[in-house]
Image (cartoon, rainbow, N blue to C red; front, side, top):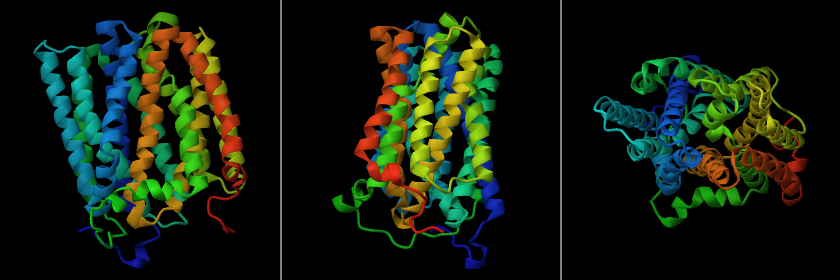
Length: 410
C-alpha cells in the first residue's frame, strides 16, 4: 500500500522531491546515452535512414499495446515499486545487449529486439513517473515543481548525449554499461521516496474503468486540444531521428558532434525551464502555447536547410526552447485537471500521445526521408507543424482563449 504523509507536510516533501529528481536525472542521462549509441550503431551497420526511423517505431509500439494495462497498474499498485521494477528490466536488457556485442553476434534486428524490451519497461516507467510529482507536492506548488522537474530533465538531456558521444570512443558496450549502472542507481533511489497521497480505492477492472482515461480527456476540449496539439506538432516536426544522417553526411562531424546536436534542443529547453521555474506561466497560456509551437516549426525549417554546424546547433536550441514552453503548459493542464485516482490512466493516455509525437515522429522522419530525401523530409515536417498551428487554432478555440492554468485562479 502506498505510504501516506501527514497533512502538515503535504505542501512539499523536499527530501522525496530531491530523490525523485536524482532518479530522473540519472535515467534521462542513461536514455540519452543509449540513444546516441543505438543511433550511431544502427546507422553504422546499415547506412539507411529508414532504420533510424524504425528504432523510434519499435520503442513506440509497446506504449500503444500496453496503454490500458499501464494506466490501471499506476492507479492500483505502489507507483514507486512499478518504476523500480521497470528500471531493473531495462538494466537487464542492456546487460544482454552488452553480452551480444562482446560475443560479436549483434546485428540490426537484435538491437531492435532489445530496444523493444526497453520500450515495454519504459511504458510502465514513463507513465508512472508522471504521476509521482503530484504525489509529492500540492496543487499550488505543482507548476513550479513541474518546471523544476523539466529543468533537471533538460540538463540531463544536455549531459547525456555529449557524455554518450565521448564514451562511445571506447565502444557501444561502454555506453550501455554506464547506462545500466545509472538505471540500477535509480531503481534503488525510488525506494527512498515518500508519497503524500495514497491510493484511496481500487476499482474493479472492467471496460469502463479501463477506458476511463480516454473518456476523461475526450470530455475536456482544452485538455484534448493541448495533448493532441503537442502530438501532431512534434510528430511532423521531429528531426532527432535523422541527426546521425545530418552529423555524418551533411555536417560531416563525428559521434562527438552528434552528441552535441542531440543535446542542442535540451540546451534551449533547459534555459526555458529555468525561466519558467522562476516565472511560471499565469496569463494567456493558450496564446503562449500557440506561439511556442509556431517557433518550434520555424526552428525545424531552419535546421532542415542548414549546412553549417553552428547554425544547425542554434536552430535546435530554438526548437527545444519552444517545445519546453509547450510541454510545461500541457503537463500542468493534465495534472491540475486530473483527480489523483484517475491520474495513472490519464497519464497513460498522455504518454501514448507523447510517445507518438517522439518515437512515432522518428519513424515518420525516417520514412519520409526514405521517400523524399533527408532535407526535404525535415523541411516538410516544419511546414506541417505551422499548418497544424493554423488548423488547431480553429478546431480548439477554447484552448486558444484559455487564460489561466486553473479556471477561476486569481
